[in-house]
Length: 403
Image (cartoon, rainbow, N blue to C red; front, side, top):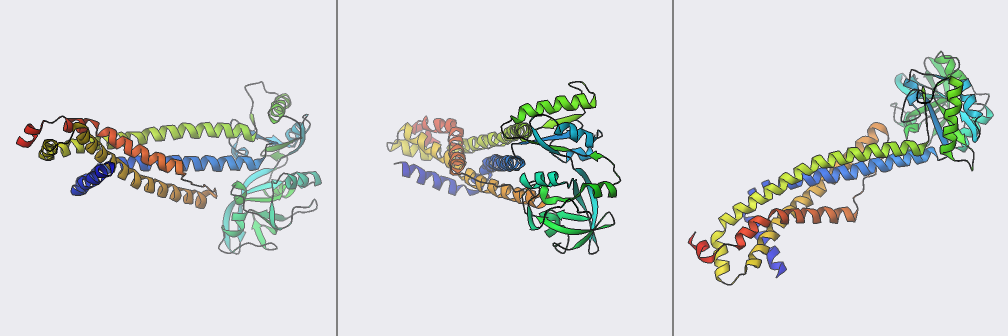
């Protein structure tokens, strides 16, 4: 019996192809928007979580200026850090060590081609190199790590070496950074983070070519095992407030752990996701109204057919079920196309994010999402057809046949 309802509903939709397709547009757009937004935002959130997990739970990032979101923010802040600030952080109880790089955008030339590349000038003392290696700040794929005696040498990010220039830059090649010749001693492995687009050079040389003396752009503090990262971060704030002579609430610096940053970013993405899905819901509502309008028209056109069915023994519940299934089918078909289109848009957006920023956004459509989207589409369509179906079921056979 149920199969008959679906067969008759499908025939009814097929007879009115143009109207059916126009009716599907609202549901199609709404489901497309919701699916693409949910999958893309979840993929972005997963990518962000992965990036922060790579920073490690035992690190605290200190940047000059107000609130910021990442280790490169210090390069554009008006407030400044110097070696004394790094030493102050280093002396805080629970801090294993602190690293203060100078971050600038440098003009890099290779075989006649010039690019602007983010450059991290790292301290290259034995202890600093230990921090870089032990905490995965610099993960070498080809070549070697810095040595304390190194001067005009560079370690390139994966994207710097393989994508930025027409020809690949290899270990042992010579490049020009701000018109100074540097030897490439290493190339980072691909990480999918900002490190892919960042080049490393020794701090002393960086200060020379960028004409800086004691400035550092950010400070990375490594927390000792057994210490609470959040508690040590608060102690770092107190120490820097005292050192820089600023009151609580008036700090000219920001102290963040990866967990704190992740919580802030997640809260923002959740709000944006909710707003965008709310906007998409308007389109779904319009689609539901469209289905209702189409079903009312269908009832009016098929009045005589309804009269014949009722005259031959069809019950009110059977007539109502027929129209509910037909309206549900309209929603379901729109949901199928919307699901496919939403996934396609998410995949395209993820590829753009990868090409533009080097961030790998994994877009996944789970079975639960597929079932949920299709079930929602069918139920929405069926609910939109309740009133037209009820009207059809209440028609009197004699009156319907007369019309």
